[in-house]
Image 1: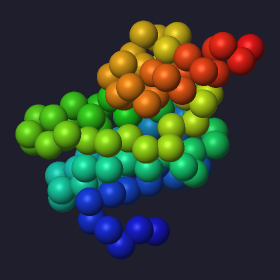
Image 2 (image 1 turned 30 degrees about the vertical axis):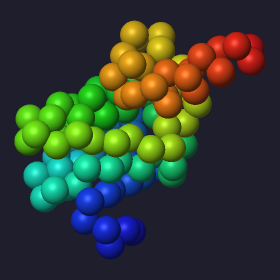
Image 3 (image 1 turned 45 degrees about the vertical axis):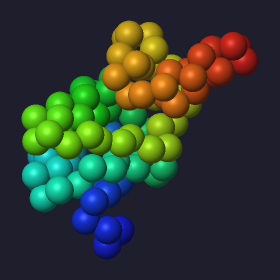
Image 4 (image 1 turned 120 degrees about the vertical axis):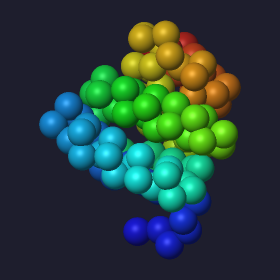
Length: 104
């Protein structure tokens, strides 16, 4: 667990079953000032992960703070592209999704 209050990690799983709990935990971290979300450990996810990440981003924006989402797994970036929300995560995710699609 990171001791840096400006960042937090998604954990290994972010699916429909865990979305409500993850959303609340992330919103609390954002309320406390976190502006960086690290997805490095994220191994199991579904479209609920996109909804949670977008909600966290909106919460940070409502506080007037930009949020940075790091280490987005290629599969999640591709899923974001399918749903048309990849641009909301920034150019690094959009280019990752494009690279993944081109490799297929």
